[in-house]
Image (tube, rainbow, N blue to C red; front, side, top):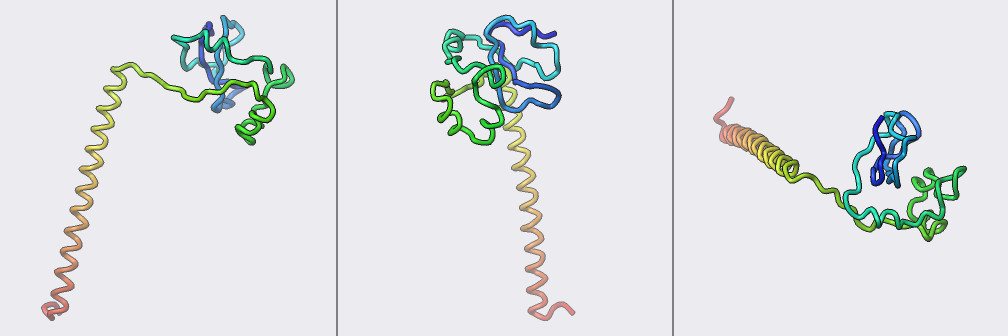
Length: 149
């Protein structure tokens, strides 16, 4: 089993292939999670857990376990559903994902290499088109001048 300690962030799921975009924070050690494939942590709060603890929790979980929002309605009705029925709910205004600087350097190098390769391929393709166009133009000129039978 994978340990879910305070600050663990994971996708929510209720069975095989059930994860979508809903995330949750673990507010403490939770031995009931981490035993199923869909219960896989993707991160952790490394700073500011006191802010997470201050999220409004008065609605509780979704029915039948609480009076919180229903996932399907969030998906189909969006933010308006949340604002109309859960006005005290907290929202993220901005969220950042921070990578290790080495990962970023590797990603940037790969992106530059990929960009250079695409530019080379594009240039080769354009050169072929230009060459073909010149050849067709020369053939057309030859036809117009009666040099080709």
